[in-house]
Amino acid sequence: MRTLHTFVALLLLLQLPLPLFAEEYPPFQALVDATPENEVLLPPPGTYSGPVTIEKPISIDGRGEVVIDGGGKGSVIYLDSDGVTLKGLRLTNSGESHNDIDSGVQVRGNFNVIKDNVIDNALFGIDLGQAEFNIIRRNRISSKPFEMGVRGDAVRLWYSFNNKITDNIIRDSRDMVVWYSKDNLIARNDARGGRYSLHFMYAQHNEVIENHYEDNQVGIFLMYSDGVVVKDNYIAHAIGPTGMGVGFKETSDVDVVGNRILYCATGIYLDISPYDPETTNRITDNVVAFSGIGIQFLNDWQGNILKRNRFKGNITQVTVGGGKTANRNIWEGNYWDDFEGFDQDLDGIGDKPYELYGYADRIWMDVPYAQFFKGSPVLEVLDFLERLAPFTDPDMILRDEKPLMSAEAM
Image 1 (tube, rainbow, N blue to C red):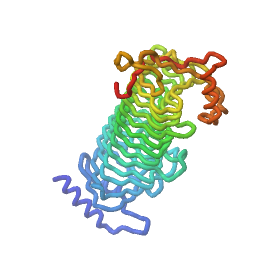
Image 2 (cartoon, rainbow, N blue to C red):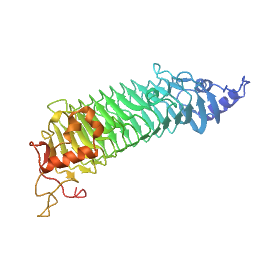
Image 3 (tube, rainbow, N blue to C red):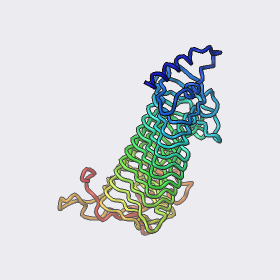
Image 4 (spheres, rainbow, N blue to C red):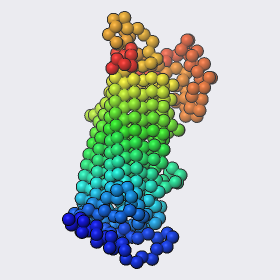
């Protein structure tokens, strides 16, 4: 009954004379101010002006019929409360300040729900700063039509813990970033047309599950972010000079399990990972296929366990910078589509180990300027001749003692 009284009062409020011009809308802040705590605000359909500041627990349901226009200044909604629900709104036309993190919604509270909204023409989408136990679900988010580097991030977490970012559709934003934040769930999001689908920095114990990341410059990149689970994600078409599906930078104790990493410049990139020598990274049951490089090690490192992965259709399966080896890691039971061997006992495992050597094709691995010629006919001929009659012993890059004979045998 109180909700009905509030709704009637708001209708009366909207009937007050307002100075309307071509670019002016009634202020949404007046509706928020008139709504008691813990009540539901059901605004009449239409377009309203922002920005809006929410400092009390209320629920706002736009039912897909309400637009809040930020007027090109600041954030559209500043949410500085606990227990707020925002749903069914279109939030548009934020400011353009990176310093102020102009956003569709700036969240500075806990236990809030932001779901089923459209956020467009907003520099940043949803920004969570020191915010905990929030739910960000089923929103459609896009940035301003700027060059990639000066767009804002679709979702940004800063010192924010125990949040759930799920089932959102992200288009043409810059990144999704998780900085100094832990124990967050990032699941079933669909992000395309950006730079980093997902970028962690100093962010521990997060879960990344069943996301679809396609046509971004980088899939998932983990910097100084330990204890992360990356499971059952689809990552495709991360291309360009720095394109990679999953990247590690001084990151330890990570599980990368059951992902499909396809058509990337580099499938998986490892830079001094694991950084903690007392830990490992577990890379298991993934498909790494149709990429320029399947797995790239920046240098001769150890501590990674690679089991039951499928390497198919990559131009180069594994590379190691500096003319070194990846054989100090554990390789076991992977499928290699270039394995040359038999399975006479029909146990599904090759009768001899899979061994990958570096021949003349190491030129482009060790000399940066030679990378321009990677895959060229000249290097392919040199590599073929070197395999026929090597002048020196080739470097063994890796040895898998139990290679699988079939990609389906896992």
